[in-house]
Length: 479
Image (cartoon, rainbow, N blue to C red; front, side, top):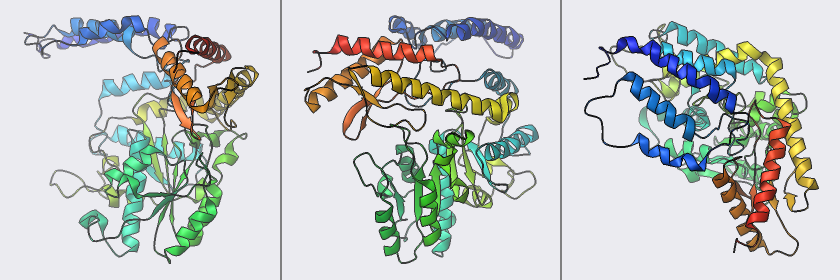
């Protein structure tokens, strides 16, 4: 019988196995395909009935490494352009291993003073990194969805307070629907957050002036004025996922101030535009927001899962997310309390450690250099698209996403859409590079995002070459 107590001396040897596999795997990322279609059959090795008698530590770890290094999507590598996914910097990866090693319960100061202090430092560093003033607070969470949930949870508590209600104690029953306004760039994660908070995912009233989704400021102001002074929430989008465009945050901040609304900025990846003088204008006005949400596992390049919410009035976090009394648990204001009482998750790993390590290792200037390198790479990709006769760029490139499609003169719109979907499917099946399709302004397109610290110009050139190759291969076979 394999019992961890009897196998306890195997831990160091098992970690040594992981270390031995890490070197070759990390070294391969620069050249390996994002995924190997031929290796898919190995996934069956994960299955079978639940073992009655375990194989032991060494055998289990060896099996996992054998299957994982062959079949895992190399999303931490330089050729993964799908979604908006960063890699893991060397410091962040090492710190993530450290978080697993130390296995801290980051619920509160009383459960881990080390994890609590690291999170306190990290939140202040993140605030400073993106240019928010002292006094803001926040919490580390698992994703931008949870960051939006946390921020909009505080907004809900604020809204109820302004209506003379205690939504934390009594919920939303008997109250009118909370007014929420955004442009057409509003992300599904914000809708999901509102859904989980009980407002409904369709609570957002979209004020857009075109098919792409650019915000209609005049229309939004008319809707705010029609509320007659009742409290409302505005969601500004700092970095739209199809082309990297931004809502005019400063203009929305003016509206929020004029009508007494809560301004929330969803900056999942675009918040990091603040790091470069070339792009900081895109987030001008975020210091006037009430809350900001972002992902660290995108442009900060730390391992999944890592998001953060920053709140202008941090005391609202404990009010919105403090737990009902339990004799053995501290409350939000207790000396032994902490971040498990300031957000949706009570059981929390020390996800502050990778952020602390990467910011400590590379600092503001290292991250500015990385962001500006990605801006240059996006410009290079846009140039490659523009000079290819069978490719058409659909939008400007304000940040790190290039939205384009394959095209041919005289081909009807429906045929173009089918062809582009076929190219997207071929890209994912091919595996050399990774990028899927979207719909932008009613047209099917590709939208590669460049946020991985490993990506070079050679990776961009390979991506364009593969797209052109697959476009030629699928042409005429997409009807």
